[in-house]
Length: 129
Image 1 (cartoon, rainbow, N blue to C red):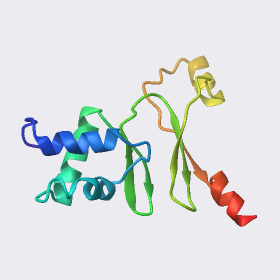
Image 2 (tube, one colour):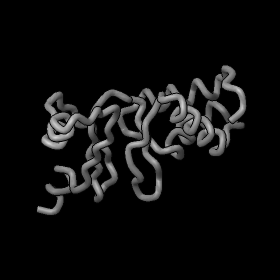
Image 3 (cartoon, helix red, strand yellow):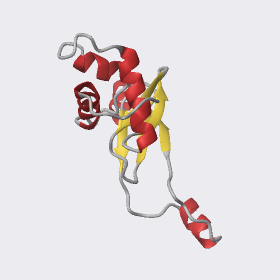
Image 4 (cartoon, rainbow, N blue to C red):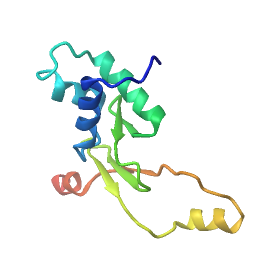
């Protein structure tokens, strides 16, 4: 990847990602910014997302309907992906899971984790009933 010089497009791409809790796709970011930056390409959005991942500014949550979904909240938390509607939810808990407790007991050091649950959200479950 070329130099990491300041660019207003790069800043706008990161702000768009960080400004939402929707766990956006590159396409969503592009749609949000194309009017403000008419010369912005989807490729530029993808390249900057790759840079942000490399820098640790964002994480990849899951692949939903063929699109990588990302999160600027890099704090320690899990996610739930609704396989019906595609919504991604944040899940926060300070409690250690039984798996983490077992790893700690065996002397492992956890440096990062990525826990993603899949299923149907409460809204989609309600629609079925």
